[in-house]
Amino acid sequence: YVLEVRVVDTVGNRGSASRATYVLDTRAPAPPTFSDPAPAAGNDPRPAWSWETTGDDWVECRLLRNGVEVQGWAECASPYQVRLTSQGTYRLEIRLVDAAGNRSAPTGSSYVYDTTPPDRPVPVGPPSSGSDRTVSWTFAMPPGVTATCTVTRGLNRVDERPCNGGRYDLDLTGQPDGTYTLTVRFTDAAGNVSQPGSGSYALRTVGLPGRVVPPPTGGPAPSAPSGPGRGGTGVVAIPPQGSTPGPGVPTIPRDDDVPGVSPGRTPSTVIPPSDEGEEAAGGSAPRNAPTRGRDPLVADPFPFEKLAPVIREAVTGTITRPTLPLALLAIVVLFLLAQNRIDRRDPKLASAPVEAEPELDFTLIIRRPGG
Image (cartoon, rainbow, N blue to C red):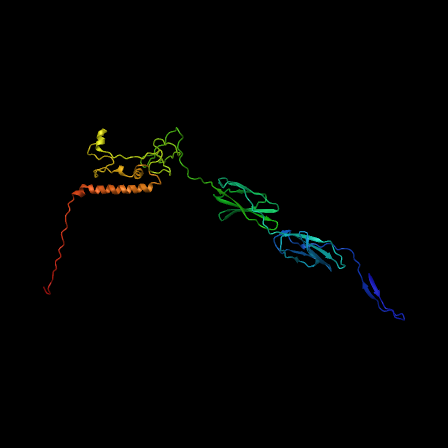
């Protein structure tokens, strides 16, 4: 609408007209649009929204938290940024105001401010070790999260990929033996990462050295161990614990065998031979021949019966791992005792004459000058 005004004097003269224009507009503008809205969710306490305007139009903003108005309608400029102090769902609403003062319908954009990470995943997988090269883990997936699986062997990263189906399959074809650790992390829509959940699997395809298994009961007894010059393979079959070895099979004592008198075991006793015993038994060895176990330089046999039962058992019985130091000590003591008796009864040492060394005579000789 245009209004024109002019002045007319008393004699009828008309002046130039003045014009005023008024635009009558009652139509609301179209709602504005966000050119760069804030993300749907995040853990950033300073989200921002952007939009564009044209002409003489401007924008009014209103901020709500969980449906409750935090900031009322007011003129605002792009980009619009707020500082958040508590978690929740924030919604920014904007509306366009034209030159006539008509306001558009509001347009909103929501932002979920979340700083709480998801729960730790709990992978459930194969046994702790095995020889299978294809193993799997499963885990429960909370809603609205994504999962990332990483496999490492020591400091080496073997694999890393998304595993959003709640299952991870590991193929170790061509991989060496070792302990493989799976680490699972959840990431929610706000970008919060959970604490890692892990599971381990030790791949063991190289077996330990085997043992020679004894023949079944009733079968032929294994041959006695052979050494150099005796033929055979020199392999000793170890009978199962608690069984009775067959002929020619040496008994391998257990670590819990202790020398001395124990249940089911009688200490061995060494009886020194004598000439009278041999004659009484009808032995054919001559009297002056050295008897078994007797040194020809020693008149009396060594008194084995006087030794302590523990030493006698260690010397005459089977030497086991716990009694090895004691057996070595007993052997040294026996050697020293036998050597002492040999030295004292050696006829060569006994008949050797003892001659005194001549005394040294020191005489002072004085020489005169020129003589």
